[in-house]
Image (cartoon, rainbow, N blue to C red; front, side, top):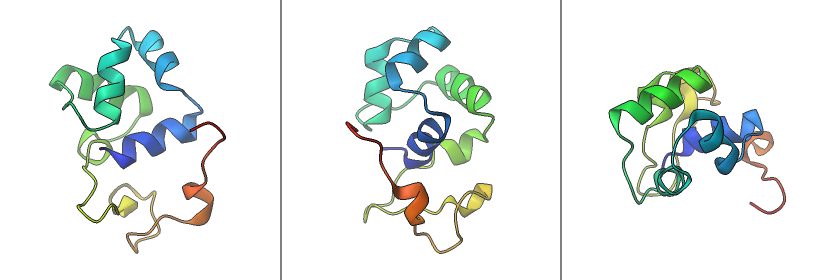
Length: 94
């Protein structure tokens, strides 16, 4: 799973089906990448990184085994490896 990618999607307000349509990507493949059951191709990494205007290394940093990640590498975390309550909030239905 790629928590930074999910965070970028959440911040943009983009749902995975809309993202797939917008970028002409297969919805099933996008879903599998987001859920960690498939690694993104180099092409998909580039397309998503450009779309979200993020470094692909940061965007596709895998979650650590304990479920946390450090968003500080791109200036979007608080430097503690923990997500702030504001960015940890989820929208209904997700």
